[in-house]
Length: 72
Image (tube, rainbow, N blue to C red):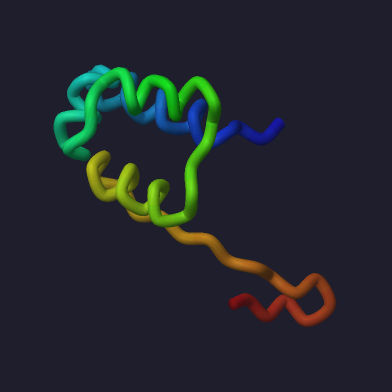
């Protein structure tokens, strides 16, 4: 089963003993704004990159060609 971005963020918050408010502070947004985005699971790629940075994590998206195993 694949986790949503919001679920992954919540797992990371738990592992790092952080709250949504802590993460919102690091991102420079309100807790309510971040909470709403997490509820809607509504993130653009650049939002996810910012979340990863604020959580001190690496983030990558890649496409792997199933025929050649090449990735972009």
